[in-house]
Length: 273
Image 1 (cartoon, one colour):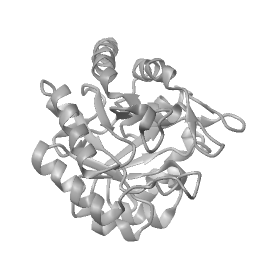
Image 2 (cartoon, one colour):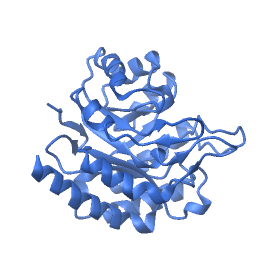
Image 3 (cartoon, one colour):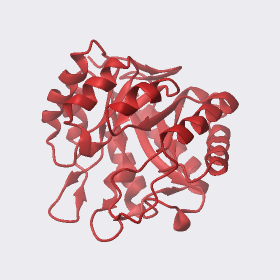
Image 4 (cartoon, rainbow, N blue to C red):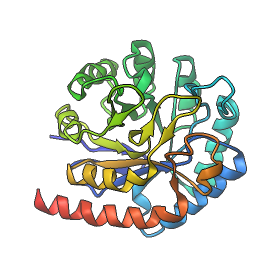
């Protein structure tokens, strides 16, 4: 049985409508984040209990030392606080080291563990001890069945508010593949499973990570058909000039149409269960 997990008023679970974690890859500026939050809030004006806003205050795993990383923890949290106050949206962000957890938890409604760090015990324990919902991205190097060990680390803190996210698996060098089997496999842990379409479409390697944006709608539909409980998708109003993951962020102008299609498909899948 899959538990219902709340991020504020947003409920992820087996018999719940499809939920969405959306926003730009990185905080490029205060004004850009506020613009994106307002646009997404308007898209969900008739479905306000389905959107969690995401962005990263620091992209700590950029390929190049010269790549843009974001404003950092303190400035990023100020911007997230504004998003919460002005748009009444729950917010989630990545943490990378244990020392960030306590400070971030004062503002954030949920914390996210990046895929590369999903086995880092100290980070997982610190995140669990925050008491916040924790979204853990499955490492692209892990079998979905191995996420049970990561889950147990969070559970050892007494925190049972866990989401698991599928974000593609390594397929040789410089390639990822989406395996929809990972969704029901990870759901066996008893927690909702999110599908990260953005990072599943990446082409890792080179000076900057590339991507196959055109496949994002197809992968989202496959994941929803397989019974995922939510969709994680990074979006940008001008993808060609995005400061991070411009090859896989989905155009803001097309996001509403995709969301509507996925909601219809999700309702059909739930009616078949």
